[in-house]
Length: 144
Ligand SMILES: Cc1ncc(COP(=O)(O)O)c(C=O)c1O
Image (cartoon, rainbow, N blue to C red; front, side, top):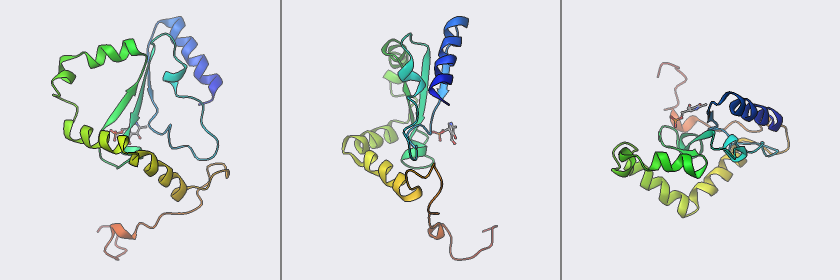
């Protein structure tokens, strides 16, 4: 979505007093020019909850994501008893992913993903199809 449309959406949320939940799990997977900033980065009035997912940038199926929002919105979420007790947010995977971020592997993996699958400055055109043979035993039977 263009920067102009994002700003218009924010204006609508202000006008009608509604919040925006921005499902932007592909925001970091841009090929070529950088995308417009995520919705939460444009929000100065705590109207946006921006959602990201490590399933897209680290490993499929991780089922772990993050929320980007103004501090007062985040405080309401992080102050909930559920989070404070580590009761529902996949603590094992969370701590694993935290290490991956802190030691720089997440950044490197994301750069690698982008360089393997796409060549920049070709308008997002796929340059190379990754070899998926590793997932099969050599048979072409789609039922396998
Ligand atoms: C647009 C979009 N939002 C959210 C999700 C959910 O991501 P997760 O695997 O972290 O549940 C997906 C996953 O396919 C998606 O495509």
